Image (cartoon, rainbow, N blue to C red; front, side, top):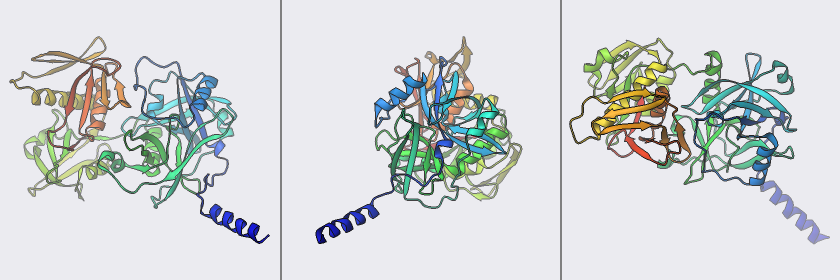
Length: 438
């Protein structure tokens, strides 16, 4: 009897030390959907081949059961007395039809409200307003208080159980992590798999710390977009007819790897900053709108918080300042960014004196004409899981150049599978230099 009592104490202690296997979340089956896309378009994000699946049979069965081309996860939120669903933009990139399935695999027709490729965010709504009665919005934790344990919820399994993975928030940031953590992501060792994209990363209280977006192929670390950023982006998309409103100045910022200062090393023609080219070109900056700038991510934060039409004042290291009114980062300005980046790249990589490189859309393809001939660009991105089909949209290339400038390079491919690489645009010969267009 004494031995039994001792064993009971041991088991009780072990149980007390074991990590909680599920977060404290009431009715999460009413706040998480399996997102399914059907009838894919001819062009989109090339299939992610980097994620494993803890139980491939579950995912295959879900896809068979729902007749899915792509499967992801969605988080239900409430905003202005209406329910919306947030998921990853890459889940929907090829979507012709979008449906959401609850834990009982009842299907609901969904409609796309809008997306933001820069942060990989999409917002959906129920096609029928009456369907909202079956669900409720989940709560966000935007306090950025330090959490240790975390749980990721993915698609509903065929038997109605959620896919749940448990782990810990990782504090240590490595060189291979950039630029994700710096632009608003949480890094963890929670092993998210295929189908988890767009699902919530939860704390112990069952509140959303962020939305699962990607996995580092080498370190296997998972990344979730912080709730503070996610909530702001979702509201922006809803309020502005499906797109995030950003400012456009016509500047290329870069961070010098040797001294850490931020420089303006490019100014786009016919942009708000163009009339100040002589004052701004190749100048190091000290502040934007009075906010000190120490690195490229300070620029990102300040620019993301500006509103279209705001006056932008740049304080330079030479003690001068320049001020002008910003424009919207619209389709035309994104095209200008793409043209600027391509022209500079072909000029920098040629050993000969080049005539002005021409970029045009010809029969639905992006064509670059230069001294050595011409290149037809069909895909762009970096690594196997972040490659996009362009489908002749120059503004889309501008979006990708903005994103991958923070990585320091972007690959251009001439075929739909991205097997044949035309060029790798390196934004600088310096190692790990970061570039940001606004």
